[in-house]
Image (cartoon, rainbow, N blue to C red; front, side, top):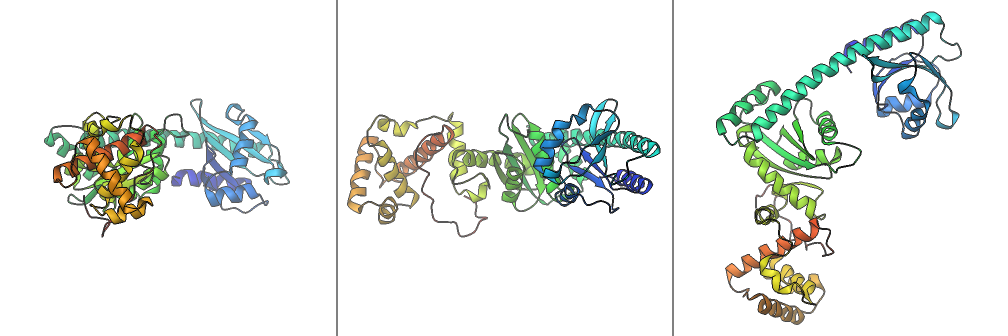
Length: 401
């Protein structure tokens, strides 16, 4: 936390001769004194993990501290290893911002010490509120610039926003940029702003900018590893995330579309997600883009003759296994655990029903796109189709489809 808040905590600890700590409304540690004192396992755990242990947080929630008076004596709880404490809720203009804790030890706080603790909580509240206001203003401006880089159709408007964001963050003009788009499940423990803020804290200092819109978080960072940015958002609380790379902020608009394609693949195909860069997904993002542009049909037109066919699943699986292996029937038969002759018969039936010939390049391409579109539709709609057979790994992770 800011040095001024830390100074206040240290000064109060020196005045009281007791350990002091400051937590936010979610029991996350903001500052703590270095003064040693009575052994308290909860204090030790909070310092090590920067947040109160779950069982401690659950117990504190039962004490009514958010609505308590200026200073409360909390009892010891041997079950969770927490000794008695004095708690001063930190407020400013009636808004709860956190909690100032003192471990009194064997000697209760006298009137002078209690008054000093309450005064310190009021001062901390004013500082935190001022910091929050400055941080909120910075966040709004950053979100405005990120939107300006990504959203306008006018290249000049995008470049103006890119120049302002580069100057604000100190990013190099020609640096490789990763753009990640993440989906945050509605009704979950975190909203998109929580995910963006958490990812920013965990990323390299000052090198991640983000905006929240609806159920999405879009993030930008100067890095050559787009997949790492996608996974950072997913670990920060997003359900799925996709990313793509660009050379310079001026190309972020295009990279954002590629990141959306990667997100669609990760959301539809668990075997490919939950987070990845488009370059890590082979040709799947291209297939997803075409399927999305077609309105995301549940049943591709080419596969319509199989809609009510009793052997639809095995015929599609036969097509897919061969197409994913560039026509290697022997390898496909091994993957499906069937005899090669059985696979040839299934392929012949599929060709007859669909009116295609797998010796023609156009028909191979149409069939492959249709099978992939069907997989994507099944995945997003919670279908029971098995996961697509993984093709051989690319020679390098950075190879573009």
